[in-house]
Image (cartoon, rainbow, N blue to C red; front, side, top):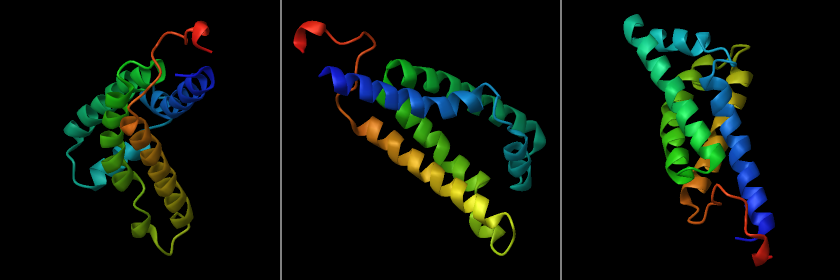
Amino acid sequence: MQTMTYYTASAARVLMALVFLLNGFGIIDQSIPAKELGEFGVPSSIVTVVMLGGRALEIVAGCALALGVYPRLAALGLFLFLLPATFVSHSFWLSAGTPLFQGQLINFFKNAGIWGGLLFIAASAQQPRLAPPDRANR
């Protein structure tokens, strides 16, 4: 893999992973998604388990994605996590005609863009390895 491709692909994975790491470590507030799970009928005792499981997945897969350790598997796992989370957290169709509509619409399609990036990583056969590229192959 050429040096430019190595650094570009690595930077893209790190930038993609940052969103999930910020969520996983609780830097981004998760009280609203927890409330929304309750509104969808999930018992409060299960909401805590689901939120902790989601955070654990985001941290483990986010680190793997950023570091290039099984990046295709990490991207697929994050995609499978983000897909239902988006429909639960950003159901813009339920807020039509309210001030929340525009924000929910934007966040839904922002997540759809992240789906695309994760699928691209998962489908890319060649991902940079963890070690920097061999300088002799320039």
